[in-house]
Each structure stands twice: as C-alpha cells, then as structure tokens.
Image (tube, rainbow, N blue to C red; front, side, top):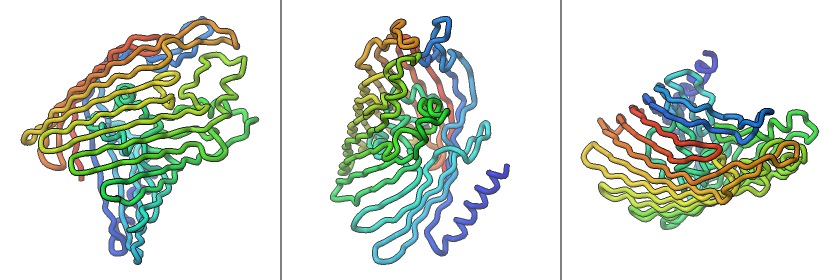
Amino acid sequence: MKKSAIALAVAAALVSTSALADTTLYGSARVSVDYVDLDTVYTGLRAPNGSLIPLISGFTAWDTVNDSSRLGVRGEEDLGGGLSAIYQYEFGVDVTEGGNFNSNRPKWVGLKGTSWGSVTVGTQWTPYYNVLGVSDVFNNSANTFLQRTGFLGSVYGTRMDNSLLYSSPNWSGFGFQAMLVMNGDISANDPTTPAELTKCNPDNKLPCNVSDTIDMYQLNATYKNGPWFAGVAYMAVDGPSFSSYFNNPAYDGIRYTRPNWDGGDMWGAAFGYNSGPFAVTLNYEDGDLNTLYFGNTSNLYLTGAYTFGNNIIRAAYGYTSPDKGTIPVYAKGVQTGFLKQDDINTYVLGYQYNFSKRTRVWVEYVDSDVDNSLIGNQQSVSIGTRVDF
C-alpha cells in the first residue's frame, strides 16, 4: 500500500513539472481470461530416486491473467544548443492479483543530441528486442514458454536492468544501437555463489556474478524505408565463473548449462513489411543464450496480419530446433543417462476488434507441438481486452 502511494505521488509530482519539461502520464490496462493446457516442464536435474525434477507440473486450468498492464511517465526537457534531457519511469501494474510497481518495466534517464543520438542509463528495451521485436504482434503475454518458442532470445533479449545504451541518429533510414550491462560481482568464496550463479530470473535480469567487468553486450543495425524494415542484432554474455562452477566433477545435473554462460551468445535477423491492410514479418535466430534448450538452438518465426475495417486477423508459425538432440546427465561426475531434445512447431491464430484507437478486444490461440524429455505439448486460448490512455 505504501509503495503504491509513493509511486503515485512521484508520478503526480512529475506531471506537475510539465511547465519545465514536456512530461506525459500514460498507461495501459490489459487483462484476459485464459485456458491453458500444459504438459510438465522439467529442469533437467534428477531427484535421489533418479526421476526428473519438474520445473512446472502439467495442468489444465482457466485463469484471469494480467497481460503486462503498466503505468508510467515519460518526458523531455530542452536544454538548448540541440541538447535535451530525456527520461521514462514505467511501473508494472497487475490488475488481477496485485504485485504492483515492482516489475522491470523501462526506467531510465539520459541525454539526446540532434546530431549525435542519445545515451541512456537504467532498465531499457534491448537492441536485440528492437530488431526481433518486430514479430511481437500478439496481445497475450502470460505464457512464457509459448512466448519463447516465437522469440528464442526473450529472457535476455527484451528488457535489461543495469544497462547503458547508445542509440544513433537516423541516417536516411539507417541506425544502430549498442548496450552494455554491468551488474556487479560477488566473492567466489561467498556461500551464496551457487544460488546466484544458477538464478534464471523471469524479469530478464542477469545474475550478479556473471563477471566483474561487462556482463553482457548487445548490438544492432537497422534500416527503415516506407513499409520495409530490416535489422540484425547480436548479444553475448561473458561469464567464466559459471563454467568453473558447472564443471566441478561433483556436479549433479547436466554439463551444458542453460544458457551456456561460457561464451554464450545469440544473433538474429528480422524483416518486415507493413502497407495497407497487409503486414508480414520473418525472424531468424541462432545461438545458445536461451533458457528453452541446452546448447545451440535455431529459431524461425513467420507472422502475417490482415486488417479490414476495425478487424485484424493474425497468424504465425514458429520452428525451433536444437543442435544437440541428446544431452548427457551426471550424478557426482558420473554419467547416468541422457535427455532428449526435439524440434518444436508452434502455431498461433488471433482475432482483434478495435472499438477505437485506444480500446480493443481479442481472441488468440497458441499450440506448441513438441515431445521430449523436458517439454511436452502445450496449448492456450486467450480472450482479453486492452484500454490505453
């Protein structure tokens, strides 16, 4: 309650300074009723009896779901001489179950020049997402596994905290971005080190002991011309401490870390066309910096949309394929078996009706067809609404 009151007070104070800076208060309320049918998802680790330890137990259920609702302020102040101060402070707002104002929505501050671009620091959208996100066209965002099959780099390629970002000016449609992520360090003798090393945070944050210098860097290059878009992106993590931990001969589990932190990287390319009633995007990704599979994986994702009147029909197909079909499992340094990794075929179909530019309703269906040691078939139906202000 105190956090909510403080956050709203800060937002009100920022809006009240609009005489000094161009500040906008904005928000988006997004909620859906979802039916989900999930097979069990496993961690890859085994219990003392030899059985795999589940990460998410299989279930079927109806649920009222918050779809990334948010409240924020953003603005710009003219400092003269072509220089401006820019900022954004956005809160995640859960309109179904609480937990407000504590997500890693964009929160950053920086400077922008008319001739040299901008430099911003904080929690921000990554260069990787600003290319591959061209395919992010559906409304439902609750099912993280089904999201990852459409966007393989989703965990470490959407928003990153502790980040420094440079964005170039627009040079006749061309531009580029570069990001550094620096998240501190902890002593190798710290008893909490293993827990920090294995942390896979759903809010797109890196563990704090990846390295003692630059934990991650990302780059992109883009071109926009009328209805056409093209871009390439790359992200990499440098973390030798992960390798030293997981290569311990007494390690119980899988030799291939998820992701492969010792030199882990991912690259992607995206193409888009949006003119009149038609919109098409095509993404390709390849690398081991993902949390869906162990080892290097490639991903192809195609989307299409057709708009008529207030109606939009969308469809997508994704094909995800790991390089390693079998992964060895160890117990105290002794190999005890294998895990099987297979291809995933993902199908998405959606319908959206726009009551206005700010209000919409939707129905979306997702089906991921897979059957291996870690993940099984998964389906979901989402019926939702969204109001922006």
